[in-house]
Length: 285
Length: 92
Image (tube, rainbow over all chains, first blue to last red; front, side, top):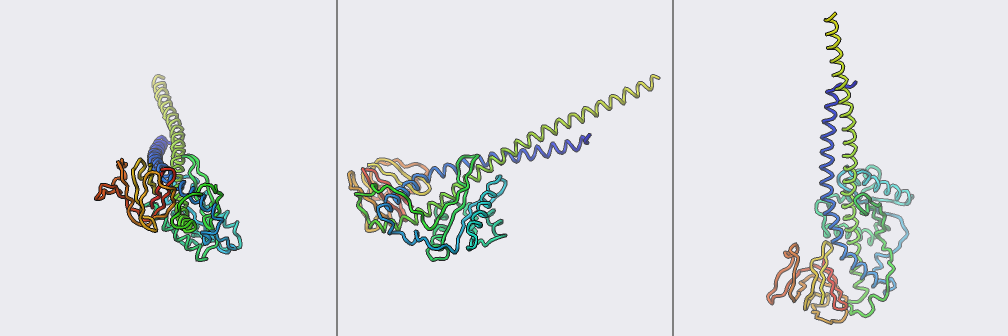
């Protein structure tokens, strides 16, 4: 039978781990709520922008914005991997890195470079492949302006011909327990099917093509910002679930240890009684 | 008419107003009730709103009050759509 003191120490250590994991769960739950609200808050903007762009580009026959829709022969691919800065969130980051490996295999024979948003992507990807930039600091101040800067950089890399294709890999937020790994083509722009009737009798200022030319970069910035926001909310969701499971496991382990402890204690007491009775018996004889 | 100002981060304002003046790329213009449908790009400048407004407390610091009692929101760029007495300003 295991030593009583040993078991007591293990119970204490499991309990303190449990306290940490349950505290982390609470923190993630609070952060998740905030991140979710942020996603909801940006929805009116992105929906309206998409609606305008769809209506306009459908009536334009794809003439405008050609520098972003240019489907070149693919030689160099840039994959933007959006992960978290911190770990302890289950398979959240692993899923993204797996998807990156899948993409590398898909573009075999072509040059595939990475851009990391989040420390975890940078740490792992840098070991095997070229990471051209790391924007982990965006999580310290997650604003549209900061995301827009990265998006502008990406647009420049595409229009200058440095890369022929840019893909985004991120976790889309479905609910606290479910994240979906998404691979979205960022550039060249995928033409959208729109309803032509939307923009029929408007006064346009300036002309339609000029408006589209201005709206496309905005929509790309919004797309990237949305991806990062989604990933941010997913991260907290994933961490919350992971910590919940850890707390459950710790509770189970603690209960088992307590049982073992009580059994050992009982055995020790029984032993002692036996010894006393034996001793008394010997004296009587 | 109904005005909605949305930024990528939040809906800054929504409610009934009597007139809106915006800094269009080809010059400032004003919109009143029953204006024709417009889709325009905006440049950096002030969006001036006339009317009895109720602005959410969280965003009050973004708005200022002008000399003629109008409410002003400074934007760096944006897009405006006016249709059927509903105006949507996408402010960046």
